[in-house]
Length: 415
Ligand SMILES: [Zn+2]
Image (cartoon, rainbow, N blue to C red):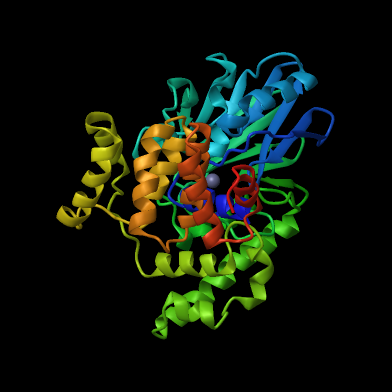
């Protein structure tokens, strides 16, 4: 339950152009895909993270580099295949579980990605990741380019505008392996971030399919690996679910009515991962009824925390909501997301006023349990057992099945 909650948060964050969920330990599995291409994969916290490595006479080339928090383990796993740093890393898009490991090898690898990655990683909530310049692509493009490496042409083609605004396809022409990032999500509904557009997903993936031969092996960034037939089924799902939701909206219904009527029950099996069927309906409905183009308040909040400190910044956030409702797009999860980002980037103390305020403002919010859980963890680590205990008790009030919290409450001698 706790894991699922965290995965949901990670993908709620992904849906806003960020996503990061870190576990303490990552068991990286290495699967050879042919004589020189390997898949390195691990559980990133409710979803699979994949890194593809081409290893040969020209050296090592990676497609994506996984999460920042798993970078050392990824390095060790790569070393077991070939003891030299990668020469090239291609980023499929800007999300943190694809670019987070980019600087693990120092400045040595040449990083290649869509032009928009550089601006995205230097704006909005990404500011909280404090990525070094080494994470940003050295070579950018917005159309296509080819690399001749380890005996084959690797074509990189831009398909932005569906999942995010910087997605690319990496096509190993000799190996017939297509790293599609989030342009295909296997047998699961995809997610869409604030710079992507769910209404363009079907058209854009349709063009990706046209660019690939029938015998290509399709490797999505997260979902299960698949064949071109599976990719076409994914595309067909996008087309048909989009048509149904659009028709129903035209009849005057809203997203919650469509969820209640289970209008996408035929595609229920696609809802088994981080984007549930209800969430997919919501993405589509929001897409068709017009996108809110106002920026979020993450950027001003990042600078507010820096300039006036976290405690005053929380107040500043709520005054922005009152004074500038037209300027920014606010949601009730904003301060949870900020707290989570601070926490995960080792700014635990600054995260606390945000978590504390979130549980006061939104006691029934979808992330209340998670907030109490992080508060408990932080106070426990700081040796404040009284506060740790009271927060873990709140976790249990909200979710008696949270075994992690129950264990700690037991251990701290409370009941
Ligand atoms: Zn993504």
